[in-house]
Image (tube, rainbow, N blue to C red; front, side):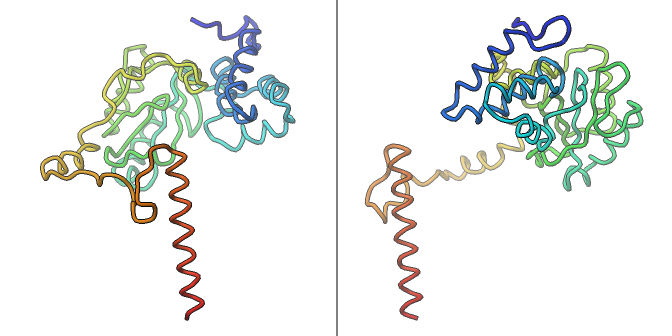
Length: 259
């Protein structure tokens, strides 16, 4: 297990080294800011002034620049997060399918409001926007892992199991790890659980099954009309797309002039 922090909760030398490692992954070091902030959260449970200062120093940015990013995205927290971040989708489809009812039940059951943490430090509850899983509505996420087709009853049982330390598995993914562990993964340090559990469920595969039953396949190659050949590399594909777009725009312009 990699050392996460020093005894006083500050950023250790090992963490500073990992922050520099993240920055070095990118041609422009400042592109590493988002995963660097996730690493700070994995160590300190939130984005702290110390974490902001460390990221700014490494990237050559002002603390105001870093703070602006950290306050723009809701995935970065300025208050400590519990062991399990429980997000309830309350966007349109999930809401009408029961997401609103689930969120209200959990607020009452856990005695917390939105973006608040239970007294035991186990659960942080938050209503979240669309998780792009409408075929499994209503959907919840625990530390960014899917929990599908939920009900107020199953949601209550879920948070009780998490608080009791019982093992919980996501519907389409691995067993649920602690929030700080997942933040480390989001920082780019794998936990080797990527292949644990199914990657897709039946609802997501309906279209594929229909295609197989009817013998449908994707068209082979690309648009050969512009170049007469398909691209063999991403660079060639981009060049062909640029050529095709330029030809289309030229024809449109010529049409306007003729008109």
